[in-house]
Length: 210
Image 1 (tube, one colour):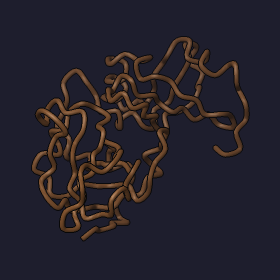
Image 2 (spheres, one colour):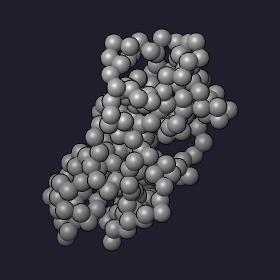
Image 3 (cartoon, helix red, strand yellow):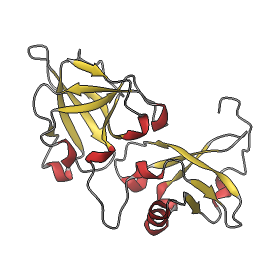
């Protein structure tokens, strides 16, 4: 049975994968869905009986705060697509959903399920951080991510919103791990990035949709 929990806050669920297709043929009403991971580690899915799936499909550029989630029971144990959970690029999720009904839906887990990290960070924790240029002028704030399908943390783009102007994206690799970790630990939510304004100076077009 699929359970939609309207009390779940969007920011409390972290998107970890995108469902790309079904795997094999349905059996007894159960389809196996293949999901590509945003980061090559599926350890959190091992032994899980419930996961969260977005209520609708998501574009490559998405804002986690705008995603609605449903809590879903898996029909059988989740397995890595190949190899072990610790280095998997994808996972296979048995669910009682119609074939191909979940293409481009996101798969997530609660933030509290994540263990502490050493010398790294969870990309979800930078949401809301402000971006400043080298002169400490506010450029915008991180409001979402772009998944470009590569499957590594450093290949994801931050989506930066600017008041009264066009949003733009910047690779996570633009920022050092230490700068991001310091901002997270200090709860300052400020990251200085020298020259970042070059990413949008050529097209500062107002966008009424933002």
